[in-house]
Amino acid sequence: MNTESTESTEDIEDTDVVVIGGGAVGENVAARAVRGGLRTVLVERERLGGECSYWACIPSKALLRPGNALAAARRVRGVRSEGGLDEQAVFRRRDAFVSHWDDGGQVRWAEDAGITVVRGTARLSGEREVTVEGRGVVRAAHAVVVCTGSTPVVPQIPGIADVPVWTSREATSASTVPQSLAVLGGGVVGVEMAQAWARLGARVELLELGDRLLSHLPGFAGEAVAEGLRADGVRVRLGTAVSRVAVAGGGVRIESDDGSRIAVERLLVATGRKPATTGLGLETVGLTPGGRLSVDDTGLVSGVDGRWLYAAGDVTGRAPVTHQGKYAARVVGDVVAARARGEDVRPEPWSGYAATADHRAATQVVFTDPEVASVGLPEPGQESHRAVDLDVAVAGAALHADGYEGRARLVVDTEREIVLGATFVGQDVAELLHAATVAIVGEVPLRRLWHAVPAFPTISEVWLRLLEEYGL
Image (cartoon, rainbow, N blue to C red; front, side):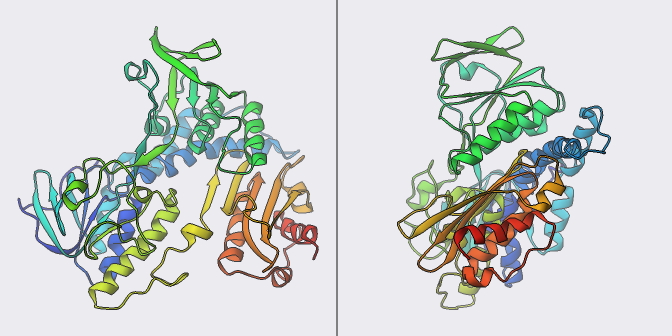
């Protein structure tokens, strides 16, 4: 890891824009501000590139892909797929994707883009003023943008403070397969890591308090993922409340409210994340630390006098996935540059100065096997909405995998006859998602969408079948 500051002076030179947090979101804000002609300082206390690059999106998918590829090969008769995964080769491939946790390449990219990178812990210390620990104060002529992301939520379970638990960071960076692993939480991180480590050879138990996995998605999605996990040997326990955890021998003992106990080598806590706003100095500008930063569609933070404090990404709580954060970051960078030029920025929906997609077309993929891909409304929201559900039983799917199983849903506004949401479940359905996203953002009439003829034989044929099921 490159831990040297790129600034050699004790005091940081004043600038036009200061971005706090150098993850994928902060990088995009800074790059857009520089492109708009503004001098920009990007402050990061850990690795430039942030959580997604080193402990989340990239390493988790690198761990999942080999198992998914092997399972896909085994679904096609005639493909020789004997044996299992080489876990050390999987770890080496993962390590390469995260640049062995060295952010030197990211720093070089930022500097080549004209961004001034400063290492250190930053906090607000007044209007348009940021103090970087051990480095001094930097003042922004136009804006400060907070892009500090989120941190794991560890539930207040008796004994948990005494147990060396895994969070998502440890789960994505470990290089030894535990004999046994308990995963607490059935959200995206929980199901992805349960399957990744099960396919690498761990005995996995997943404990979820609710009555289904992936509760923010349609029920059929969570059911399909649960079946996929069980097929990989994961014991899925729904409606399970953990009452106590304790160190036991070289591992962890977990007690549930129903009186059951399990002993595992590792415990992964995957019970959600919260905006990282503690220790940012928000109180110096009249805000309360600990919660999310409420923003409008330009990224302007509510409750602060003047148009100078902005935020983007998970810290706002709007659409907490990396690609939506980067989208909001591009909007914020462009808004700050435009306002610095004296333009009267009007955040009209779907304009370059409004993150409208956060409300109507936020996308997400769960990279389990089967995959889950979703955009927009997952369920009908009012009387004029209709859900069109269909099994993915098309020629392209049958050729893609023997015994292909999948499901698709469109949520349609029957008055306007446009798509409001889509959910796909099945092997390799992530690549279906962008077509749905384009249809939603473009408000493409269904009768026009019917003329977008899917190629034969592809899984995209499901689009034709969904429209036929609707009645076209």
